[in-house]
Image (tube, rainbow, N blue to C red; front, side):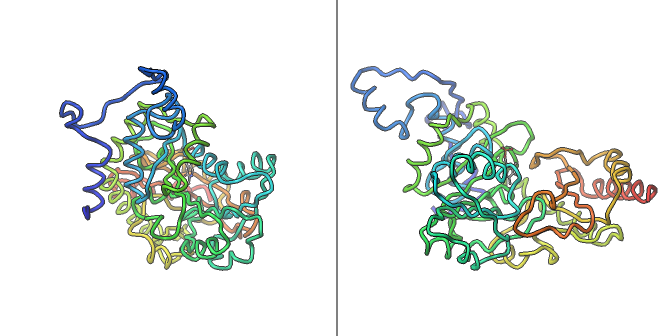
Length: 390
Ligand SMILES: *Cc1c(COP(=O)(O)O)cnc(C)c1O
């Protein structure tokens, strides 16, 4: 078609003239699907992943969102799930079995790590964590039973940007699948399939939804992996609710303009913070201090609004004075909505392959859609409260 991304995201996953001219696709609520004949019922049962079969396998509402997610990430097929974590679990459980080995990036989203160390381990899958900056060196960690190399770009909390094409080259020469958690870029600023990724996952909960009110995830796969993953995801019961699919699709229509604003405000905050005496480092992929910044420049077309800063080691009371007193920055874990956020975090608690140096206090920020100057004033007042306590 050759149309630009924003144009494609505007038109994908809807067909007004098949729906009374109504712009948005309708919400179908369904559990039971009725079949007119025994023959059609038996036919549907043979191919549950190809149409409307049973509520858990999807409805035209989830199919519309899945089509749009595939368009967004540039893959063949989308699979909607009830949370981002369900998408991660569904993808891993589709491609691993007892006796297999998984290579997992060390700065992965913490619940993904708990999945590896808990459920996957109990079911006989072994995980080795790797340095996010390992690049082609990953080949030395690949074992005969390695089946999946999982990565996240940039990684949670610390924002290192891995060299995905180098990881993918090594993985593919050993017949391993490459999975990516693409939540940070929302699939908008990074095209996974052009960089060697086989399966792209994201938490729709974050930017695609964009309004902090739904939990959903997606898996985008090539045609050849679709049936296996769709059957596993439906078999686990990880289906997405129709109202949530509708809201996710509505969020997707404004994803581009929202992300460009998150990017602009995030960069403005990052540059302002960089100048502050209290700030040791800003970990923002579009800033030169961030490990993997050159890879971000090579592979990404933009930056979303989530990044971290490291300030001098700060006692809890001073941190509380800063965080409790913010007018605009909220404290909360999920992100990608219109509101700005800040939370403290300690990556040293989470890492195993690459010990975190642990000098200073890490704060993760989300640049929301408020006016950037108002956010800067809020930050400035926060630093004053902090300094008054030191
Ligand atoms: C939030 C998040 C998830 C999990 O998404 P949920 O919808 O909250 O389950 C997965 N990966 C990353 C990087 C996230 O930030």
